[in-house]
Image 1: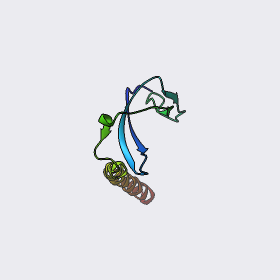
Image 2 (image 1 turned 90 degrees about the horizontal axis):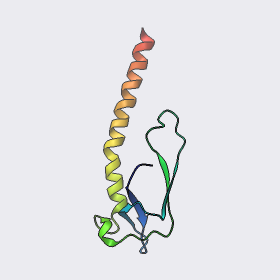
Image 3 (image 1 turned 180 degrees about the horizontal axis):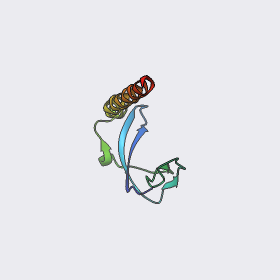
Image 4 (image 1 turned 180 degrees about the vertical axis):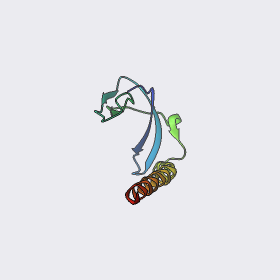
Length: 97
């Protein structure tokens, strides 16, 4: 809800996915998502209505957006697995006690 720019993965005319930085404008609308636990995070649905983004706001090379996004998630998946393993070990330790 508070962002002025949105990192957006979009399908371009060639059918490939490209990453863009889209500035907030009158054609970009936001509405809050009801969250359980963290209401101050500002999590929102972002809707684009006839938004045109210049090529200068493209991130990286055209058509490589999906690979950029997936490589970003690699470390997140790793840390989530660390947290899950730690939680499982704590549960096992508590059950032995």
